Length: 300
Length: 272
Image (tube, rainbow over all chains, first blue to last red; front, side, top):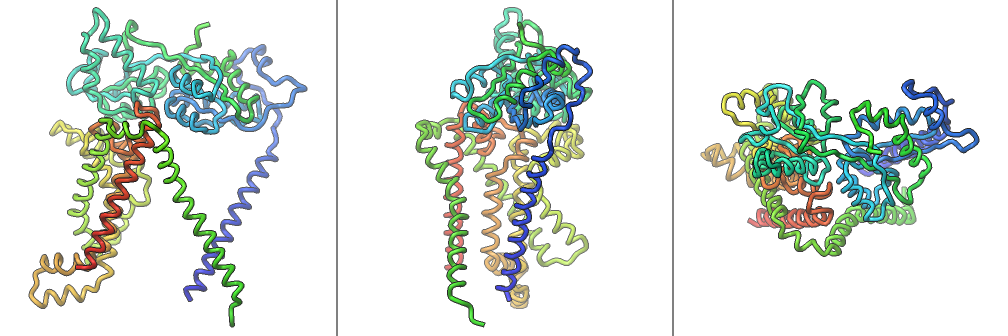
């Protein structure tokens, strides 16, 4: 009886897996047939000239396939919006993202992750990838500025100097994560300043550190939830949190500018589409999208 | 009907192929880890890093506390669920099963909504006492308890269920107290199940990551357990990828040792 039972179960499982395989194949076949719809008009914001420039030249084979973009967490919203614009211009192309801290992405890329493009939130992690031979060169495509955020109400922190007050629950990104590194640079700058909050300021602030978050959005979430009294994120992240958080500018003299490099990774399929994505980001239209989310343009 | 020997042989070959493929799937990742750890020259020096020692110490300490709390609080619950007939029993039963099927990240968010600084109980507690759970070692244990305790309760409950309640009744009629009966009759009878639940609970709490990251945060020496140290290393902390591999290897060895110890404990229980 049990044998018969097992037989049935086995048959059923086999049928199911067959179905799954067939289904997958079918879905793929359908995907393949999903040919490019006629190109539609692109975002109204762009001037006719730039729209012309980034439309594929007639006569050339239109771009198609998938581009896998590994991008810093702070780029989530801007890149998703950018991809929408990009995909209407290149209807055959699908942009797929993997967002995480640049340091995590660099590790993944160096271990052979199938990424086509790497957009890092700092030069250090880009160098990490270039040194391991995964990319040849990079271009700065955006800048960002760290800010202090606190929960909208009831935080013990009302100024940058308050970070050193005993009992403050501070959350930063890990020292290897770009925003975590920038945060510590800011603290170092403040400690070193002649007319600053004192040479032990950085140490006193780090004594209040409660968690090293994996990426900038982790810091933001802890502040939004009210678990942390303060955290350092990018201007662009603070903008997304809206009224959940209060933004406190870091004094200009101690602050740093985050530079975002982007690179096409070597020996990956669909390099043409990857190049088109990078070109789009550097184009006036791409820069306009990035600016919309609060990013700065690279210094010329 | 007589089955042909050929069909039998075909079945044997199929089973062997499937089994070997499946076994390889388990062996290869372990082999990869060990080979990489040996290749990386820094593995051995990394074992002496304070961050590694702190993470291992914290993991061992918090999982021990978790398992102890689970046994103290979970055993009565398991016993009640196995023996008792009371309203809401089915509900309690399902409730304790829930964390087993929930992703740990959900457990982390749920803990925040209850014990976080804006949580339904966390907020009043902080208002009265000034104490907040998040970012403390206590929070690490709470996260582990929520995700790991159900494995013990589940196993203990089925252990209690599988033994004949008649035996307990006989003990009572012979004049043994309830407590004495429980420790001298019930526990020894359910011992294999309890031990299995114990190991599962311990393993699950040693491996806890998602709920801890969300509820307890990630700070060396305070809330950074082994899995958090591994993911931090993988994400580029000063330990680097070599650190992630070294930490993984330590966790592997510790887990193996614990399994061996529990296997021996299981045998020992059968002999006595």
